Length: 148
Image 1 (cartoon, helix red, strand yellow):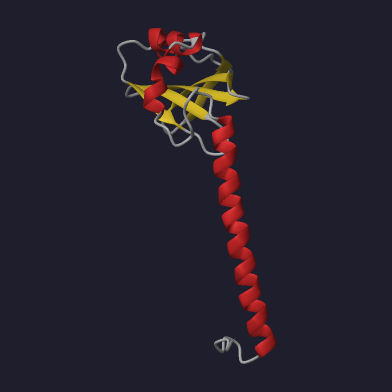
Image 2 (cartoon, rainbow, N blue to C red):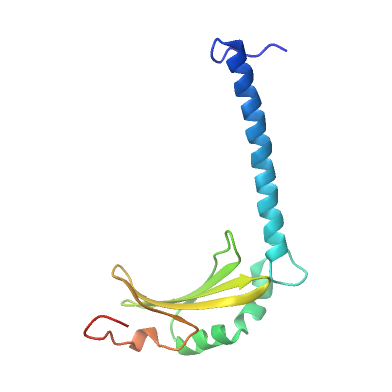
């Protein structure tokens, strides 16, 4: 087999080809492991990570914290996002002109394990963060000292 002249040095050319082969195999195995892990962690019965989240919205929507978020922010447009990257995570966001509220739902071992409720002012940052949904972001008054 005749290798193309990459560097002018035959040993260096061979080393480059071997490195490219190894990187290709490692990259392929990494992609397979990532996809396999997502399938194992996907929380919904009879579906895979590649299945549609929309088919399971009823399961997510009936979680007590999600129901509380929808009840608290009724009348605001509420947007759902699938934020799954390295772990299964979803969010609901409600916004108006002045503030926004986000409920992050994170799963561990196929069960919802974390419900983080954040309130923020676009461009100015976070007003507060809490576990669960207890404080109405849109009627929240910032204390004089700035601490939530």
